[in-house]
Amino acid sequence: MARISAARDVRKPLAPPGRTCDAGRVPAVITHDHPLFARFYGALRAHDARFDGQFVAGVLSTGIYCRPSCPAVTASERNVVFYRTSAAAHEAGLRACKRCLPDAVPGSPDWNVRDDLAARAMRLIEDGVVEREGVPGLAARLGYTPRHLSRVLVAELGAGPLALARAHRAQTARALLASTGLPIVDVAFAAGFASVRQFNDTIRAVYDRTPSQLRARARPEAPSAHGGSAPALTLRLPARTPFDAAGVFRFLADHAVPGLEEGDEGRFARRVRLPAGVARVEILPDMRPGVIVRARVEAIADVAPLVARVRRLFDLDADSAAIDDALGADPALAPLVRAVPGIRIPGSLDAEEALFRTLIGQQISRGAARTVLARLTAELGDDGLFPTAARIAADGAAVLRGPAARIGSVLAIARALADGAVSLGLGAPVEERRAALLTLPGVGPWTADYLAMRAFGAPDVLLASDLVVRRSAAGLGLPSSPSALARRTAAWAPWRSYATLHLWRAATADAG
Image (cartoon, rainbow, N blue to C red; front, side):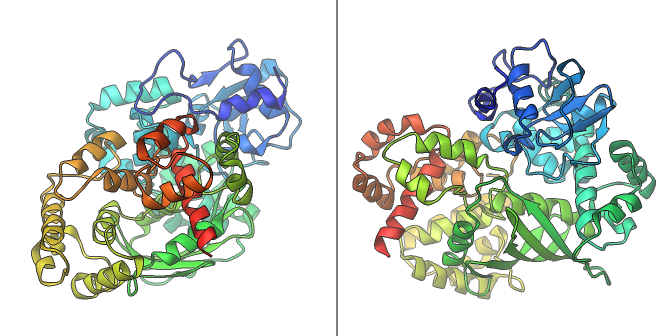
């Protein structure tokens, strides 16, 4: 049971998306008498980096918690307890290991695969909602009372929303201390702390070091410039291996809108709206698995939301080894998986923008869509930003070109978004957002599914009606009709979005 082959089951989805806590869910705390303990302990004993970010190991005899790949000698089973989150380990009175830095890893893939209340809450916490709106604001976005939300999170993750947000702030602060030259006071507020004293107390409690000691240990390689209200930052965001960074950069470059974005196979740059201001962002591939983010933000509090959105844009937290194992088990897909290991879902930095780009581009060529979107940005955008829904609703009729029905749909959707009749926020389940989209004029299943995959990061979307997907599937000997293809590929769940990307990529390779 302790062999790593047994531990591989840990990487499977914990429950179908949308389900709440049940008897089949991995609990928040796993002790040595739990049936799953041997699997987790096998991963710890093997120092397997594939499990980093998916759980932490608390060592009761030393009072620390580690990532599974920690190089230290593995503690005795009787002294080890596993926690789903670092916040749960903090709540148990443990501190982070100084040797392996258990939070310097990709985030848990569970928040991508799962779409239940706990997963949606974690996505919002990582986006900084607790710092901006408090726990009542977080609960309101999710449609529950703060008491019920806290009860679910403690049961599922071993910590309530405040503790989870505190752990996320500590992780953000450590990353900023390690990779930027920002003054420590600015690091405190960039990470979301309300005061420098709170920041100092939290860092000492979590890491048993002062902020200055953490920075001295890290020796930043590329200190950030600081001047005025727009500090420049350089951050390293890790990804699990394998990581097809080139594929994401290529996809973003192929769909880049002139005047809004710049990109090629090794760079992507643009301006993006964040909760407190606008940021200029440049993203580059890292020699280590992951990306390097160079950004200049107007408000230091926007650093954490920016990091969360870039992680979604490049799908950095995906469990690529598990995805490749599952899809590669099908003989039809195996050659594609071998050719492109670690494929990722190219996401979006703004869901509303992604919706308009999809609506405008879905019935015309990619080049024509880029031209139309470039004109829309130039005439209605604000200083290199994509226009807001309100601006499109007010002035889009004078700029948009094409069939009257399509223009009418775009304007109607812009009004619905501007009025708040439809929301694309992270708080609602993906299926709920998809259903809301389908009520809008001009939005069909393909559009709603494409948005679920690109803007919401849904991992299990097969665009079976997509012409390119069907043509590529037929080339592999798979059914080409949407219904037959959907039935044949049911076994690919819950990773059918990645299969869709493989089929798109295969068609592009054949065309080349």
